[in-house]
Structure formats: structure tokens, C-alpha cells
Image 1 (cartoon, rainbow, N blue to C red):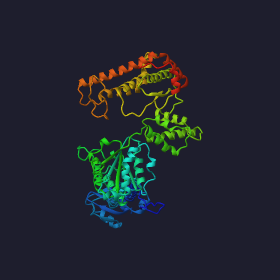
Image 2 (image 1 turned 90 degrees about the horizontal axis):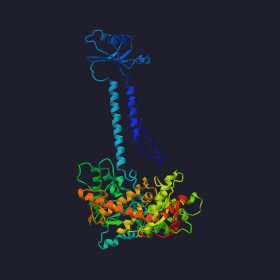
Image 3 (image 1 turned 180 degrees about the horizontal axis):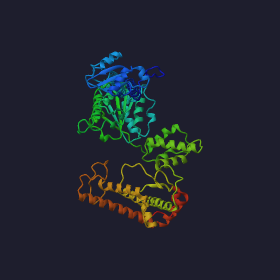
Image 4 (image 1 turned 30 degrees about the vertical axis):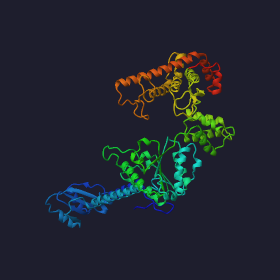
Length: 604
């Protein structure tokens, strides 16, 4: 019997797939049990004895066999449900024997016995019922968007405004026009203006694209429908397209609002002419999205906002005028932007009065909004762990180290020899960095293990730069190879600790040759097909060009290595003194580092 489950709110719940299958198997098992145990073969003479003893209730005769159903009394005594025997042709005694003991017999049936046929029929019905229920459940799961698709529907707009967004002033200004349209669409319609139907937010992860979309809806005071592009993707062809239709139907039913699709590249990848049917589901979903974007009227009041960090792989049909015809760059913030972001997130934490957020912003080049929020949270955890009432600069500096270099491994065992190698290695980086005129200044040097494999690090404070000149890149190469040069001078041999330095230096030197045109031997030519491509990509290179590139890269690295070695040999006493101070203290700040370098710098 099927008993539907009920929830506390009184509504009937759909049975789970596991319960449906279990119920079907239970029905099948029950019917199999009803059909009796397996028939027991018996000799024809013994079957006649059973009939004579009154143990047979019914007999089914066929041309080659006899099926005899035992009586209820016989079954209680241990007899099987049925006996089977091979028939003896033209036995004149069988029919009188059956009549004498009032046994029901029939000779017309030739298939399986009636109980077994009924069991098979019932089992087939149970299987069909299970398939139907599972199919209906899959259909509900595939086509229900509001519940199953986890679409976030903020009917009363959102609680975010542009006051909660910082560090992306240009992007915020771009979206002010959208806000004005959503607030007073009649002004634009009267002039015959067409507001962009789709706005594509482009930028690296963590820069605040989703927050900006929510703030846009909050500023305009309109409903906000949010969904991830991956939630449209399904195995079954047509489900994704149905979800797209349902999403836009829901948005249109509200009259106006913002539809936000995060990670648009999940469904908006460029369509290829590959094998037919290979990507039918994704392409149908994309086609439906294009149709829905075309279906908006100028006065519909629905704006589609999408976000991606990979705009280069999107289908060109998405980016044409009339669809996502406006792209807004949400880039990494500069120093002022980072300070503004820190001030926004600082509203939710308690900071000491001596905290200088401008200084923290200068120490975190390359950080995005998510990184800065995590930085303040780490500082708050450190302050709480120390039992402090407010977050101070000490906790913020420790949080920067933790985010940049990883968790401090205070209990990691490092033997004396390895610790000495690390001290000279990091001292080499620091001295070369302070000796090269265009290198970034050193903020901190440490030989305290952090993260997964970092035994030490040299932290440099870099400015927000969009361009770098050749002499600045060559100074950076010398700093990267400074630790390796120090090991050669002091120990006369190299260790495996410079692996990451060599990878970074080799990649930079190769880009100088293949992308930046900073090699006289190769000349002003860009060999890499795309700046985002792997610099090791050699497609289309001849053997001669590949050999010239490798020789030029090697020459640049050898020059940088020799330059770092000359600086350190000229300052050998300073190198020894700085290494000894690191071995004693573990970490040195900039003031302590400059005290060690008080003898002056040798020009590089």
C-alpha cells in the first residue's frame, strides 16, 4: 500500500526516488512470495500416490508435463506449493483417479501456471509505476526554477546601495544611467531613447561585480532576480532552455526589475561547429537566452545584468548591440580605492584609533575587495584571540603577512643548516632589492616558515603601476636571483629553495623577449599570439626562432644573475651581518633592515 508522506504544513510531499524504488521492490518481493516457492520435481508414479492420498487440489495438464497444486493441509504438513512431473502419454488410469478424489483438472493451458503469470503481471505493473513516478519527479526537478533552481528573488529590491560599493567609482558612474531609467523610464521613452537591455560586468574574481549588481537594484528600488549561469546547465536537452524561459517569465510578471546572471561564461561560451549533438543542451540554453534578450521592449523596465571574468570566450552574438551592448569594467582597485574599500568594511569591526587604513592600503597592492574583507576578518580574529577590545596595527600587519605568505608554522622543525641557508637566501634578496635603483623597497624580511612550503620570504611594497620600463624589469630579475646568488657566494653550491624564484624569473625574461620586444637579438616582434596565452606557446615558430628565443632568455637571466652576484660580493660583510640578525630575530622590519644597511648602498 502506498501511503503518501505529509509535511508539518499539511501539504503532501513527493516521495523520494529511493522510496519509490524500494516500494516497487517490496511489491515485487511480495508477489513473488505469493506465487509460491519453486515447483518441486516429482516422479509420475509418486504424483499419482499424492493424488490418491488426497494431497492434490488442482492439476494442470499439458502435452509433456503435469503441474499439481498441493492442498492447504498438505502445505501445512510441509509439502511444496506445486509438484511437476513428466506426463505419461495415454495413461487410462489418470483421469479416473482425478475424478475419484475430486481433483480439479484442466488440459487447455500450456504457459506458466496462473499464480506465476499473475505475479509476473503484477511485477511488470509495479515497474511501470516506478518509472512513471520517477519520470514525473525528474520533470518537476528539471523544470521548477523558483524552488529547485534556487533563484534568488528579492521582491522588494535589495538592502544594498552604492554607498556599500567602493573602489570602483568609474563602474558605479556607468550604472547611474541605468538607475535613472529604472526610476523614471517615461523620461527616456518620451525622447525615443533606448536604454541598454543588457549590461555585462567584466573583471577579475572578487572585485565586487555581484555586489555592484545588487547595489544597482537597491538604488533603483526594483526587484532583483539573481541566478548563477551553472544552474541552467543540465544533462537533459531542453531543461536549461526551459529554465531560461521561466526566469524571464517571472521577471516580466513583476513589470520591472533586474535579472542578474552570475558566471555568464558557463552558458555563454562561443558556439563551435563541432560534432552535431555534442553540445546541444548548452547551445539550446544559449539560443533561448538570446531570444529572451531580443524579446524585451524599450519600455519593459527589465534590465539584464551579467558578470564574467572571461569575456574573451563569450559568444559574439551575446555582445552585439541590442543584447549585452554595454560592458562595464570592474577592475582591481588602486591605493585610494583599497582605502575606500577598507573603510566600508571597517564599519562592521572595531578599530583602534591609531590604525592608519591608508598605510594598510599601501601595503596591499593587487588586493581586491574580497581580499580586503578577508584581511579585516583575519585581523579581528587575531585581536579576539589576544583578548583585545579593538583591532590595532599589529593585528593588521600580522593579517597582511598571513594573507600574503600563509599561516605561520611556529612548530615546524627546521634544522640548523637549512635555517642558515634560508637566512642567507632571504638576505640576498633584501640587499639586492635595496641596492637596485628601480627595485621595489623591502618592507619586511622573515625566515619564519609560513604556508605549505615557504621557509622564508622578503616582502616588497610595490606601487600601483600600469606600465614598466626595461630597466625596472631587469632590476626585478636581479632581485629574484639575489637569493640564489647569495647561496653560491656563501656555500659554493645551490639548494632547491630557489625553485619558485627561477620559475618567476624565467617567465618574466621570456615575456620580455616574446611579448614586450625588449631583446635586440629578436627585435620588435611579438611572438606570442595572445598576451593571455601561455608564454611557452611555440605554435608557428620555426626551429631557428625557438633557438634564438631560448638563447636570448638565457642571456638575460645570466646577466641578472651576474649583476646580483656582483652586488652581494661587494657587500659580503653586510650579507653576513643581515643573515646573523635574521637567525637571531626571525623577522626584521624596514627600520631594522635599514639599520643593518647603514654602511650605504653600492650602485647597481
